[in-house]
Structure formats: structure tokens, C-alpha cells
Image 1 (tube, helix red, strand yellow):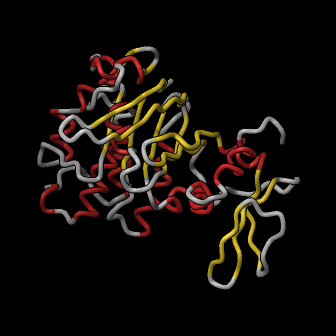
Image 2 (cartoon, one colour):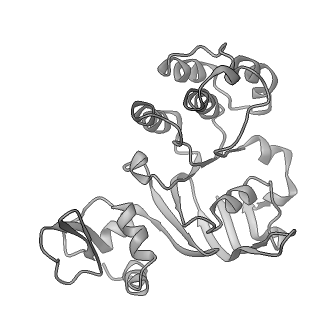
Length: 280
């Protein structure tokens, strides 16, 4: 369990507040992390990974251990992959030889299967790849580490349409119920049916942290050619109307883009009151 308790972070070099009094429990499962540019998403992932120090130190823990202590066992259980990350070794096979030994759950057979899905065998020189192919190789390796905490910052960037579909399948097949995966992305439709909960930050503050089943119990995501009565939030799009309404028995999939837009709008408080209500 990742536990955030009154977590704050201020960049030491220029004093800007990135996170402000964030409190949340993040259990096992696959979680979507949303927020505008500068909301604090990457900073939060860095703190969970132990790359930045939480304030106070005990305000970010994994199973009770502060991530700021950089406990060796905790580091062996955690991996963060950011959009700009470069691997220090020239091929995936050399990463296996020099790096995978630090991750006791590494699965070599899974790596070979993942690489094969992208038409690779691990011997290819990463610096000769296009950005998209390099990302495929990296993701194939990262998922095979099977780290208990996996933090992915915009993992689908630079991937083509078929590669995004393959990545979605790999995420579903290469993770299990004992892992906690947090995916920060602006292209939510790439992983539409994968998430078990959604976490939303806004200007460094936690706005929402809810399982998907709780959201769909309380509200519905609907569309119509005419404005929708009793909508909590509504917006026009290409000649029709998209809306969030109270759930009166019509359970729908979550429209993450619509949910995010609603949480940035004047309708936010009304929506949150319904989402946080004990009434279904």
C-alpha cells in the first residue's frame, strides 16, 4: 500500500510548491493519474520512487517504510519510467546482464515474449532505433522486471496505433493483483478499460482518488443530440452533447476526458459532492 499523508513538496531551487497537503491511500491495482501540466504528477511519482524527498519524510510510505529513506529492498520493488528516460546500456540484453539482477522478480521468459511481440530479440542497438521502437524495447523490459510498484509517466508517447494496442494487452497480461501500477498520461483513451481507480491532481492539490466502481455507481457518462436534462456537467462536441448525470440505474463506462474536464470546471464541487456521497 502506498500511503500519502499530508504530503507536500516545494522545489528547493526556486521555492515553487509542487504538491500541497496530499493525503491518499493507493492500493494494489492499475491507477490512472490525471492533472494539467504542472499539476505535480511527475513530482508525485518521483517522491513515490524515492527520487525526491517528501515533506515531512514520513508523508510518503510504502507498507509503512518512508520512500525518502531509499530502503534497498523498497528500491528493488520499485521502478519508475519517465518519458525522457534513457537506458545506460546499449542493448536490452546488456540491460539484463547488468541491471536486471537488482530486481529479484525479473522474468526472462516474459521479456522474450514481450520483445517478440514487437519483432525484437534484445540484441538491437537502442541508439539506432527510432524513438518509438526504442520505447517499445524499453517497455518490454520494464514490464518483465515485475516490480511491485511500477510508475509510468506517459508510457504511450511516440508509439504508433498498433504498438499502443500491444502495450495495453501487455499491461493487462504482465501485471498481477500483487502489483501497484500508476500511469500518468494525457492520452487516456490508450488505456480506456484498464484502470481500477483514478487519481486527479489540480495545482498540486488532490482533487479525486476513487475506484472506478464507485464513480460508476454514483454517476453516468452519456451523450445525446440534444442538451441533457439534470446534467451535473455538460459540454458540446461535434454536433452532440456529452454529459455526466446522477446514476439512476444506467451504469456506463467512465469517460475520463469528460470527468477531467468536469473537475476543472465550476461544476467540480457539485460533482465531488455526489462522488463522495454515501448515497448511491
